[in-house]
Image (cartoon, rainbow, N blue to C red; front, side):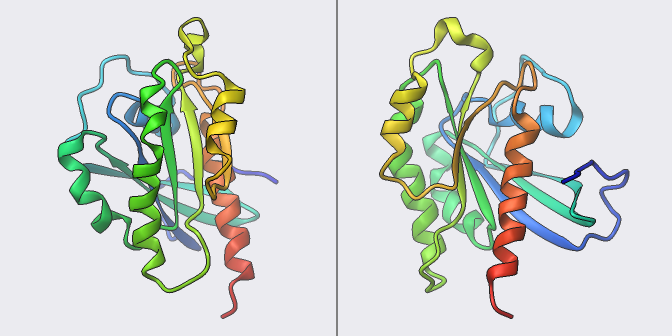
Length: 192
């Protein structure tokens, strides 16, 4: 399957997906988005206040897919805002930092906020979430190894588990493409 970034973020799209990126502060959510949207890594990024959102059009299976990407602040003081932003979400990316085990330890809290809001739709389906370990370019500082992370996540209903580096670009595009393809497939399975 081919995919590519469209030239204009304002051209008409065939489908729109709202994707929320969430997790503790400082895990690299904003640098992930910058790498994905603009193709570069910026070392010093200011803390997200509340929420920011961005748009990107990609082409999958001859469809123009608009990704509305919501970058949610990870600090505790903004957490009360999350339920209102989850409304209408198509999917999510929970991001943690492989060099800080504590950023994975609060996954229960984050996912419960996400799933609780989604379950208000009175459906048996779960909101597709990819668990994403960031900063794999800092392997020497790793405190969460791959097998421990996978074991930790076994009890969660998640779409996938991946690791990436916003600094090198490794797997950055793949996580968004994988989520978009899943959402397209899921649309085909939903009766009209």
